[in-house]
Image (cartoon, rainbow, N blue to C red; front, side, top):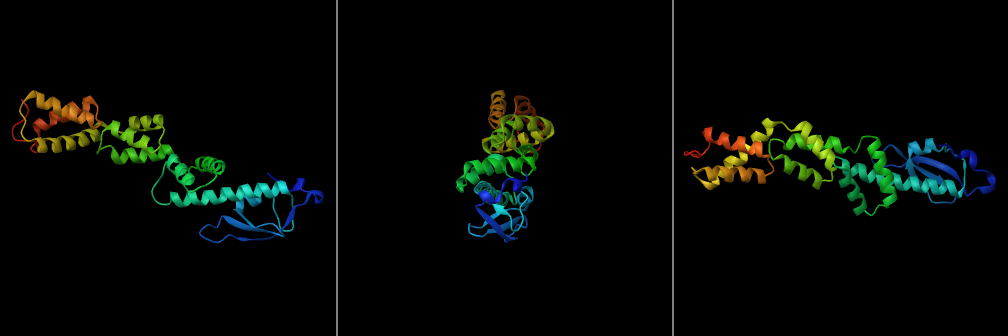
Length: 229
C-alpha cells in the first residue's frame, strides 16, 4: 500500500525528518521522527508498505494511519514477549493483551496477523498438549483441559481422535486403577470391579478403556493380592 502519491503539499500536516532503529530487542521496528508531530515507532515492513522516505510530506490521514500502525506494533511486541517460551493458545494471548489494557481493535488486528504467520496456532498447541497428556489422563479430561485453555471444541475433538492411541489411554487408566486399588485395599467382589470402572470413567476414560484397565488389574503383580471375583 503506497500512500505517498495522495499526499500533496496542499494538505501537508508535517514531514518526515528522521528514521532510526527503535532499540530494544526487536530489529524489526523503526522510530520515525517528524518535524513537529510526536515520533512514532512502527514496523520496518510498514515503512516499506507505505512508501515512506526521509523528507516526505505527511498529511493528517497518513499520520493517523501511522499512529494506528504504531499501536499495532506495540501490541504485537507485547504478544511476542508473552509467547516467548511455552506455547500459548489464541485465547490466552488475546486475554493477556486485553488485561494489559491494549485497544481491542488493535488486539484483533494483531491476532489475525499472528494467525496468518503461524505464530499462534491452536491446532499445533492442541497436538502438543494431547501428545503429552495422552498417557496420563482420560480423553474427556484432555478435551476439558484444552477447552479451559481456549482451544475450540472441534479442534480439541479432532486432535484427540487423531492423536490419542488406545495403548496410551490404557497406560493412563491402569495407573489410575493401581492408585485406586492401593487406597481401597483388597477387593474381591464383582461390585468392586464395577466401582473401579465407574471411577475410571469419572476420570475421563471411555467405558471400553475403563473395562480393559479393570480387567488388566486382575492379571498384574502390582494389584492387590486377592483379585476381583
